[in-house]
Image (tube, rainbow, N blue to C red; front, side):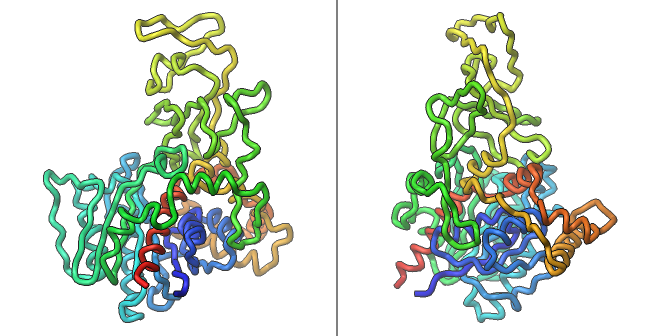
Amino acid sequence: MNNLTLGSLFDGSGGFPLGGLISGITPVWASEIEPFPIRVTTKRLPFMKHYGDISQMDGGKIEPVDIITFGSPCTDMSVAGRRAGLEGQQSVLFYQAIRIIKEMRCATNGKYPRYIVWENVPGAFSSNGGEDFKAVLEAVIGVAEPNTQVPMPEKNRWPYADCYMGDGWSVAYRVLDAQFWGVPQRRKRIYLVADFAGGRAFDILFKSEGLSGYSAEGFRSWQRTAGSTADRTGTASLCLDNKNGPQGDGINEDVSFTLNTVDRHAVYAMTTGSFTQVAEDKAPTVLARDYKDPTAVCYGIGRDTFNQGKNAKFAPTFEEELQPTLVAKGPRAIQSGYTVRRLTPTECARLQGFPDWWCDDLGIAEPTMEDIRYWYDVFETHRNIVSSSTKPKSLKQIAKWLRDPHSDAAEYKMWGNGVALPCVVFVLSGIVYCTQSEG
């Protein structure tokens, strides 16, 4: 059979298209408005078409695809956000995705898309007293069966996994935590799959691991065995380079230790905002706000030095000649040389399961006028939708940006808004397996 095809709404870091390539799916188009992520994916996946503002897309006029993926903005449903709910300024874009899906199915007599994948924060379960997730389910099921009413669960508490089935359709969802799928980051996300032409949604999310060829250990093996060079021209040849990371206990006199997704070390990571926490081996969830205040890591310090406990709040004190207060819990640790620093952008890429080089070499040495005009439109779209700026960028400013579009802040923001690649690969591999097993 022909390869499945994929369209990615709210594309961000390109996780769904990249996951599609790894799973044997062809990404066809994407929609995104942030200039930096668009530059990343136009560099890495130049064959993929970009549509920009989702509100200007017509699902009946764009290329039909087998799978539409969308991690619609979660700010209004996240427990770290303002909890404005599904009707918040950003989260309401969920309904734009549903509109596009319906338009495409109408234009193709219900053939495309067969599958959709929605990714979002677990805060969606409790947003607006649980009513928002009920609305999500009703909107998704309503694509196949209009006017569907989904009952609220007992005490308005949605289970972390469930499945709904009807005449010729199925919808299943499950919370996946990235730390169990191949990366050292604690990142829980809802993955919802709809199969509008059969009952395979449950199999995709709950039966396909191993059978589909995907496993968390398999993903780590893919990272370990990948070469140290990468084809960065936009083909499907993907390589990860973790070979050059430090070995042993990760302490070097003059070199800062670097987290990677393969080797585990005595490393402690902590967030630096209002949700501070110290954790061993697993980094806290990478957040979009980290572009202002990136997650910090520290290494080479005994756990006991951190206020007597690995889950203590981030308020450690270090004194050159004084031992922390002795307590009955056990002996204290002394560390004369310590380092506390923020995560590097490369580490954030690794925590999301991406290649180290995903954001490398993005500049265009000599931008053409065609390049400048294209990116002028990209920046104008972004400015008109989300930017506080009232003045368009000049062509000179655009040309300067194109020569060196990278900044740590932009990359931190992209990873914070992005998806954990191994979780995406698990879901998409399940779709491939279940579709091919139908013969």
